Image 1 (cartoon, rainbow, N blue to C red):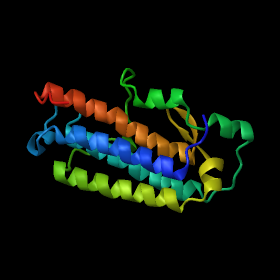
Image 2: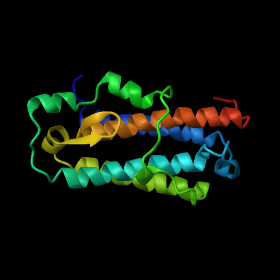
Image 3: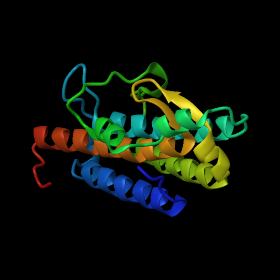
Image 4: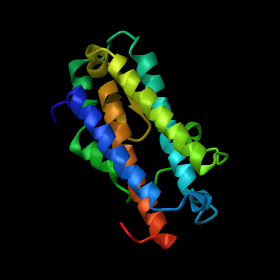
Length: 181
């Protein structure tokens, strides 16, 4: 898969975030704090989790982009985003247990979670635009499930991650009785 341009990555981020927020808005604010079950996240917790992912990717860009370029051409080719990796990220067939650092605290109101989401996405975009293309395409950082990803692929991951959780929120909205997809 050829690498996306910066403009294409930003467009992907915007498109998937808009789709995610459209699903979130299906559930009225007060109900966004309701958990559908003891081991399931509320809409507000899903929003907080997505914000934590954006924050983590922004931090990885800042830290990793300062590291020397040490990946081989083969490693770099393996670390690019592919349709298969994107499908795995987006797919809801595989249940994924989020690492502790990106699990929601459950302490944010729906409004606070949405504000954190907006701030985290702004920080991610700023970090992406501030990162040199050489680092975006030449530095590799591992993902716990997907494997090594270039920094550019990590930003693409954030967009595909939004799509995964848009579907999760859509499922939750249906369960709560909000069926207008």
